[in-house]
Length: 217
Image 1 (spheres, rainbow, N blue to C red):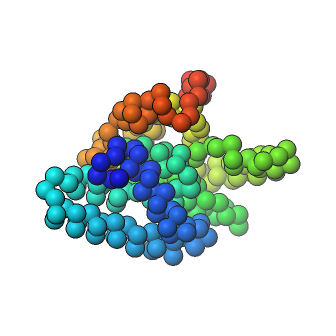
Image 2: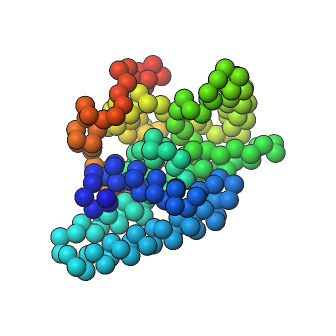
């Protein structure tokens, strides 16, 4: 997968493998990440063995993707967003970052703690399945957002329409983090290759016809 698939597909797939195989839980992250690292090491070991048998294995490419993948992504949309952010940031990017404010415990989907920036994917599933769940989720979301803002965190939200143009999404992330870094480091740039139409074209499973980024300005 990491050797032959496109960068986006490979990164997302490995994140999902690490998440499932580690039985990732935000409430026991140290143990979850240790299990994920065991899975990662096994994958890297198989990659090294394959490299010894064949000369044309793109080892460096696969190793880069495997090492950057993270078990804290709960779904492919979060993993795709993490890939975009990691392909830009010179700072540590952390998934399921724990933030405690006035005794209340929150977990940020994707955070750059040094910049006090949070990126979150807003999927409809997070709002519940009925009107009561939606109302409760909305109240909790407002309280959470207010707490984070008061503590100095800035939250940027991404939803399905933003995935219609990944190059544009990446440019937006560059604008956000670029204020604090002079350039994109080679280690981050090495993760990015623009998806082809085979990966992110008309045959993609979902499409949204409007751009939410335009609405945000």
